[in-house]
Length: 324
Image 1 (cartoon, rainbow, N blue to C red):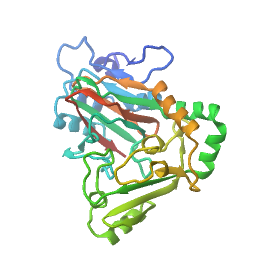
Image 2 (cartoon, one colour):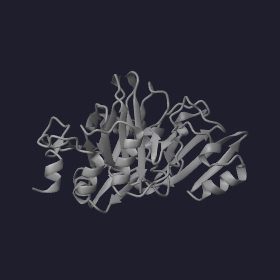
Image 3 (spheres, rainbow, N blue to C red):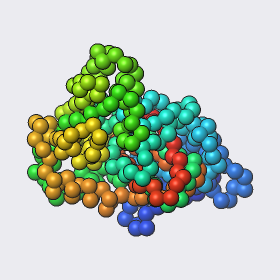
Image 4 (cartoon, helix red, strand yellow):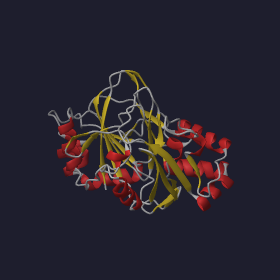
């Protein structure tokens, strides 16, 4: 019997439909009457799990004895994936090893669909999420296949897709100097660029193709134009890969005009009807993961968008890790 069959149950799905297995779900083999440690199971089946991730784009490990941040860190280390130190603007705290908190913005706020750090020159290729404290209600993490969104949007709005292809997107955000706990993009520029020297911040921003425009102690961060799509070489398909959903119309205390937070690469505003269709499509096509304590979710960041629904009944504690 193959190792993967001896340690894991058969590949299952959270989907109620048989049309698509997404994400693939792996549980301990019920015929083994002793606890199966997830790091050991992953080490014994690394190539097989990699093949599952390529095939299904997301893998949920459920029912394994993973309880703490340190347990989770061992799971991440067991894969052999290289570390990707987090350098984004999201409100996060490092917990231990390669483990961070998930976005610490107010839990009653929704976080829109996005690929992690899609606006930077280099993005993590894989993401891990771990449920340390199961939510009471709400707070689901939603995931959707980027290729499905690209194909459907191209079919419904081909001219919009063509303009995105030709022009790309520019992202404009205003950041304060210090941490803002009320915002999903909560890090101040001092923490973001690891300096309180404006000239040093400018130099570090420029390395990632980012321009800074100072407004007193605040700074307007201009990113782009950036491509909106990428070609997935492994799967030989084009996918949606941008931060439109988390930027469009976002209200920020420091921005005086939310309509200009994300625009076409030539500075022209985006058409509201097409963007709203896109936002609705994300909700229609996604899988909403109802977290259970101990869940570990592995997703291909280059193929899957993820989001967070508002938490209705606290508490909730989700941890994250990023891999090259």
